Amino acid sequence: MTPASPTWADSKRFLAADGWREIPGNERGGSRQRHVFYEKVLDDGRVLGTSVSHTDDKTISAGRFGGILGTQLEVSRHDFWGCVRTQTPVDRPVTVEPAPVEHDLWVVQVLVGELHLTPEQISELSAEEAVERVHKHWQGG
Image 1 (cartoon, rainbow, N blue to C red):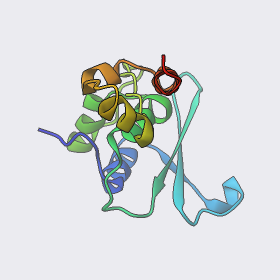
Image 2: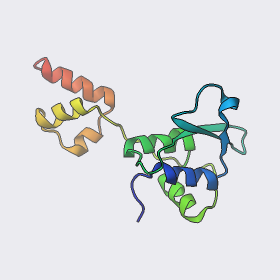
Image 3: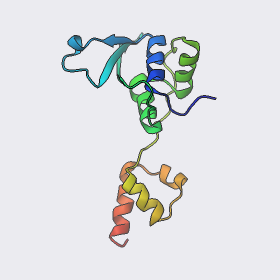
Image 4: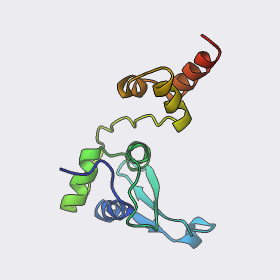
């Protein structure tokens, strides 16, 4: 069984195995103190880009990881962990899972504490729908 979210070190192992190139700071312009930047040119000519924290042992939140998978790496969770495990590049294109919606903590507190929604009901709401529901509740509707 694989963890729901990787550490930044797991992400670096994926990038190395999948053939990503680290972009030197002088090539990208600007400072690279907080993150290391990478790019990958796909067979169709598109260029993917991502960045990784220098803090290898910290875990990436599940929501952030889902977003990174879909919008930056363009791989599924299964393919990410398969690449990390086997050190074999991902054969793109792949079917990418939609990233879960992350709601602000204050919104979740109202949805659970005042409106008594279940986690499943909350997960079905977009971020905009959740905030709208809270505002409507506060307005007495």
